[in-house]
Length: 318
Length: 244
Image (cartoon, rainbow over all chains, first blue to last red; front, side, top):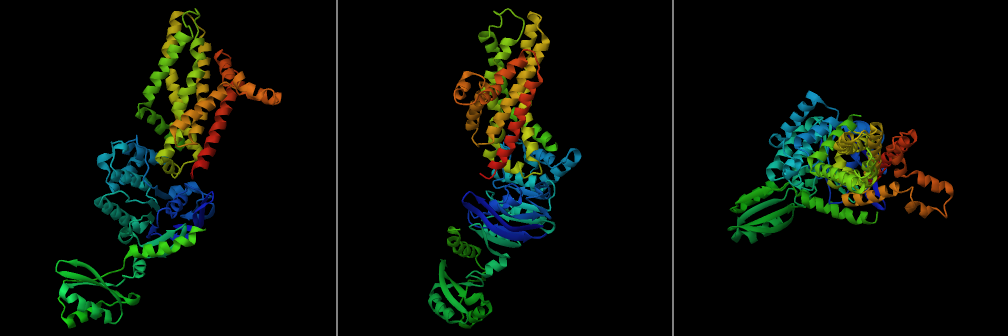
């Protein structure tokens, strides 16, 4: 549904996006990750047809953004960064304006607005000027605008930024619910969001695509993938740490924070192998009174940091 | 076409959503009245015409029209809504024309609300109403020319104050380009053709010709093509400034 082909954007001497290629298929929710200024928003703006690329191109539903920008915009719902909307207009007036610009009028327009309002739960604030709405509602007005024409492709730049936890939960639920019949791209720097909604994630740093995979694949790259954390009485901890370190497949044992009378030990496996079963056997054999035993899937923030800091020096002189 | 209508509707109602419209109309009516009666000696002239009324319009528009034009694009860029507008399936030309027409229609409303002075002059004497209609038309077209310049300048910046000041200065140059203020700068070194061309851009000259009741195609074409030129420049500027 979205094909990005060696897309590049330069602002004077600054290279914002440096040859990104990727594809997004129907049913996928792709997470765009990257530090601030990595080129996420610029890429999204080019896909949405706002900025024109200086090299390469992108196609949305088969339409080229350079040659057929209007067709691209027709098939795409876009939430710009910060969800801009006309502050003096009411939510209803704003959505009506957007619907009219999309070519809907009369009953069809009202039906579409009604559906988008229902999806984003805006009903109570329709008569209020957008100026007076809370950040969460503003964001949802922007989202409603992107959903008016039930687009096949959705590009959402930081859809949950500034929302409270409940609102985040709702927006993520909405994205998940729409995912099967659409191709969705969201940008975020909240890593838990990737786990919560994305079926795939790419990491962009310095204008380049530096990693592409499913959240599970990213987690598998983490040092903490399959790491086991055990909490046991403080008295038993030093002996246990020694014994764990000697067990097979264990790379390191880290002393964690204390939880009341217990101490947490995090056992890091070598090469991410599954050591849970063997550790369980060891615990039973030694008779430790463990209060906690859990296996980690891996830490995305760790992987994110490792990937983006490694990529940075390389692109500094690009 | 569709986008022009939608953008027009939005922009036109946007004027009335804030106090801007009312402040503008009140000040325009008060100033045009005051100038007519005090500076123009409306009564002392003893003539039943609106010449004193219309002769001040270029100077009134000089700073009032940029005030309606300044928000057209600067505000969109400031709030980021331009990104929203231009990622909807609309043609940029349609949006530029829609905004311009909304501002022009608003200026037209303000101008129409000066009708009491027309009633007054008809009550006091028997003026040539044909001349008055022509003068209203001339004034409206003049406002359109100022607006096209103002809208184009507004697209250059995200700061409305800068848009206002620069538009005032640009409009001033066009207004007085037939007078020594501008011509002295050119005469002496530039060829006569250049001086004459610059002089022919004078808003005052073309406007006064129309307000005398002579609707010459030449003057209408002048304002029409000037508006078209600046709207085209407006499209180019919006396109160019998108990335920054």
